[in-house]
Length: 299
Length: 229
Image (tube, rainbow over all chains, first blue to last red; front, side, top):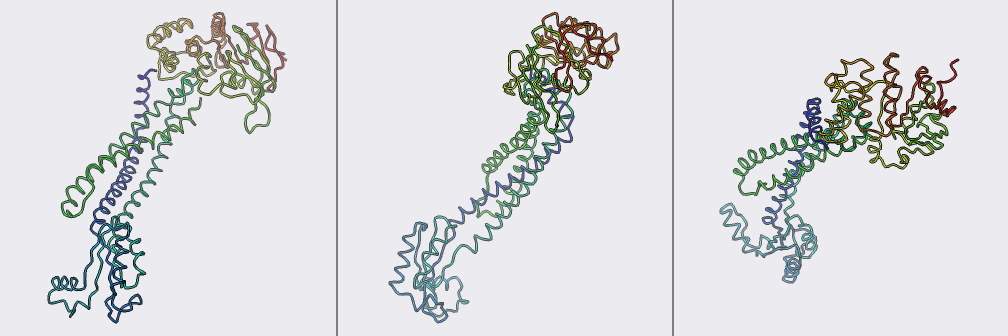
């Protein structure tokens, strides 16, 4: 096979349909960037989960016998009830560790924390509690359901209040990026299709002669496939650059500095996101090219 | 070399049959004229030889292959054994005469050294050795058709198919083209030529197959164009 011909054709093809190819590259660039951002947000969610997972606890508050308490409490928690709660917590597979806090300890901590503003007169006004650290903070529901019906349980505090808004924000961003990315991916596919149609039309005489003299289909479609690969390379390169820039200037240099307590996506996450779009980009251009060259360049 | 056995061809969406029970046997080295009015099925006949279509029923054998059964990836190999010439020349206007002829070899992967010897040979055969670097625009119609014949013949095909090759040419150019096709035929290449040109057919006295509404109505060993009434 004469590669010289193929590359001459490739060069001509790229030049002849330059504006179309630029449109494909730009659409690919934006769509792949959005997909890459979605992947980065995904990594960020994982990192945040790992971080918060070790920080967030479930607290089981036990009855103290005060009047205002709900139906679950018939009086102060008894020793047997207390033991039953502890046994249930200790036997749960999701629990990484736990410790108990008596009314006295709670009272001392609150007094130290609040000083003169603390108005509770005795430890009996507070609740004894069990502090539970979970293996995975997302699975707090199983622990809650296992103890909430036990007698002597006054209330349960979960990480839901902190986790839910955080996850919903990240998820909204992530799915937003995927969603917009998907529309642009569709636009990219259509553009690739149109580009091939134009290119096949512009070269119809050559293609007709090639078919008649017995050129193989691979030979006829190779310039088209190479055009697809070249546009994909440009699109991926631009998107990879944009993601790297976003990470470096947006996260590494800025957010990471100001919000140091939390782990942020690192260069490895960026590399893996670029890896995925480096696969996705050529797939997006080569597959429609294969399908359409079958259609337009039928031998 | 070419055998049609009870070939029927119907195009999708059309009620009449383009070819109807056509059985024809063309031996190696024969020169055959295919005559008949427009729409009689001549082009369909030629296209079936090229395996541009498959027959609706019946069998078509070309160069020892039954084309109904030929896998589509093997079609290019079949076409390398068939040269094709058309009424409208189908030359690439941005390529020189030599490049046009060389293109046919280039795209089937022939080496450059082979192209360098085969192209001048083919151009000499058609008498255009001195016009290798001209563009098609600079040539007369007859010369352009000779370039097209050189392109069809450069790969030494077993079969040459010509679809009205003289349709756009004046009588002098036409007779030159016919001499050329005759010479190619004498090298052992089977030639099948569809034509409307009664004068040529009558002068050559070759085998004539006449089609009418998709049926073979005449097959004569050294025939004339037909009833000129």
